[in-house]
Image (cartoon, rainbow, N blue to C red; front, side, top):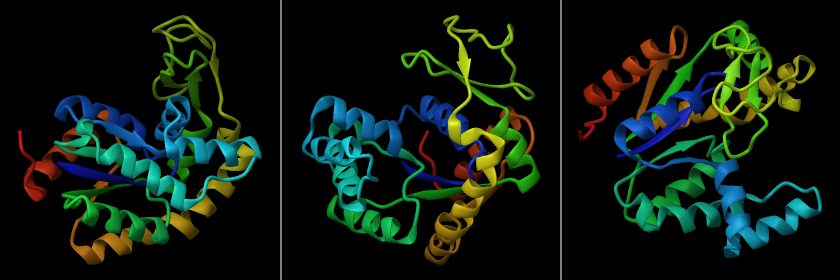
Length: 222
C-alpha cells in the first residue's frame, strides 16, 4: 500500500501518519527525516545534500528525488510506504511520478487532511516538541498537554517550540502552502487518487475516518 498525505501545516499529518504506519506496518517517510538519515549514513544523496546544508542553502529537488529513490527502492519499502511532506509542489509531484514509474509502482491513495485556517493557527502555535532528539514526542499546550508543563511525559526532557511555529511566522507558512502545495490537491484529484478527510475533531475520530476512507476507496489490504 503506497499512501501520500497532503494538508496544510498543523493539519495533523505527522500524528496520523505515525499512527497509520504502526497500524499497517509500513515505513513513514517524511522529507526531513529522510534527509537527516541520508546525511547521517553518508549515502550519495546524503553527501550531496550536506554540501548544500553546510552552505545554508536549500536542498535541490533533484537531490530530494535521489534521496527518495535510495529509500523507496530498498527492501523496507517493498510492501509500501506512507509519504508525509513530500512532494511539496507540482514539479516534485511530477518527479515522484517518474520515480514511481521507474520502480514499477504507483500511489494507491492520496489523503488530503482538510482543516479550517483558524484552527490551523491554534494547532501550530500551541505545538511543543521534546528537546531529546531520540524521543521527539510532540505535545500541544491546548489539545494534548504534557502532565507537567514544559516537560516531556515520555523521557522527562524539556519541551521546546519550533522557531517556525511561532505566531509571527504562521501566516507566512500558510501563504507558502497555499501558493506551492495546495495546487497538488487539484493535481492528484485529476488523477483520481485523491480522498479528502476532515482533519478536525479528536485524533481517534480522524484516524477512524482515514481508515474508513482507505478501506472503502483505496482497496486497502489488511
